[in-house]
Length: 234
Length: 191
Ligand SMILES: [Fe+3]
Image (cartoon, rainbow over all chains, first blue to last red):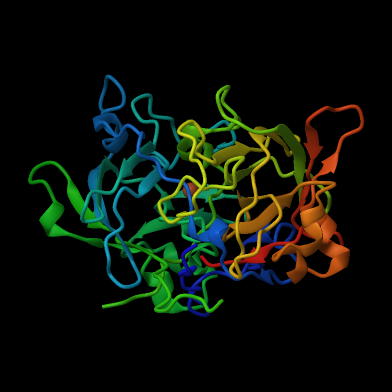
């Protein structure tokens, strides 16, 4: 039996605490007791993989999932999934979901007055390539109101779910857009104490991935926990 | 160059658009070996209200105690039809259920065997980060010496052990209480 080579723990305050009272839904859902520190075992350094997931054009191009064209500004969202040491994570499954250009989700619980778009579902998935790269074509999502507090609006964002190589490396996050005037007022974006960590959720405008006459490019790199330098002592 | 792992954000209320494409509530295909178990329960908040917008992800070894992962180099059989991964949403009443096989035992960091267990990630609106917990099995002698259970104060260990259901053959109940005096034990095991 090989030694366990654990994944690093998050740097202090670069991950949100469970209770963040400006985000009202945390108040009754955040555990009251601190989590029990668990050294990683074989159960945590292994994890699911998804070699059979089909990532065809409809999975990665959210503008081609229906007969017609969705409304809104076309964007390219691309980047790399790497670990904290800069190593690419290959065959990592990324799932995304988002509101349409008007700020409305195709979801029965979304009561926003904005229109649904019959040509936009708002979900996609991809596997990273050998360099850890991924790429989606979609439309820029609209901001939308929510019931957290008076006149609460979510900044434009795309939800990302990412599987790293192990159960200990599992991330769900949101990607934002630079210059969004709603960012300073959003309790979800601002839930993390470390300002640098927060700002890394904001994608970077990227001329290189822009397609002339078609779509603007935004880059969003995702970093997963790296390995400890030495195996855990037995 | 090195930077810290990306910050977690909540899955929000509309995750089913993106995550429910790949629901997996039955891990025990016909040709998978092992004892079938149906595990059911509810996710409840600090007011004992059901949480209808949560999703659980589970990860477990096969019945021989082998994970479908390259870093499990134990000399035990792999089973092509058993991935060990499941994704299970709650319904409007906060209820969930899944079917799997009871996992075999896997080693702890000291090389001793852990009791059979399933590791669980919990995502929900209002959870800014996933919660991590474990499901253990009732009447299991190995529970008494289990590496992870021993890290938990004895009065709280029961929150991690599924219960038999009267009259239900192969049915276990395991509830997930997010907050309160009898809240489920959650583990800090990384991201
Ligand atoms: Fe959203």
